[in-house]
Length: 78
Image (cartoon, rainbow, N blue to C red; front, side, top):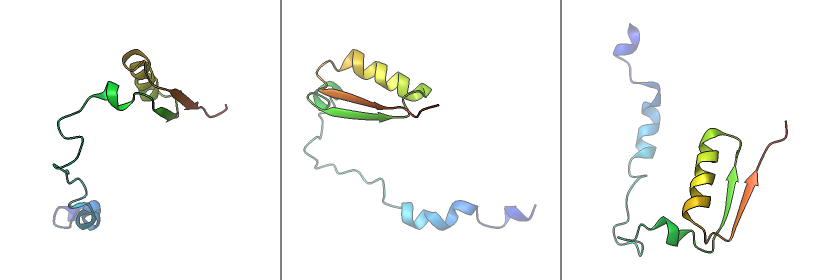
């Protein structure tokens, strides 16, 4: 159990991560988290669309955001 007293392997990355998730509270999008309006007229690229999560996201976009301009799907050949 020598690992108990030593730092975890990810400890060397912690200084780089500090402050990386800061939120800009003065953003122009403040208080306007509307996904439907955000994707209106946009073009979307989804990679790995045969995976479970991408299928769920694609279905959600198709159902919830009818004003999306284009959706491109990148599928790897078998």
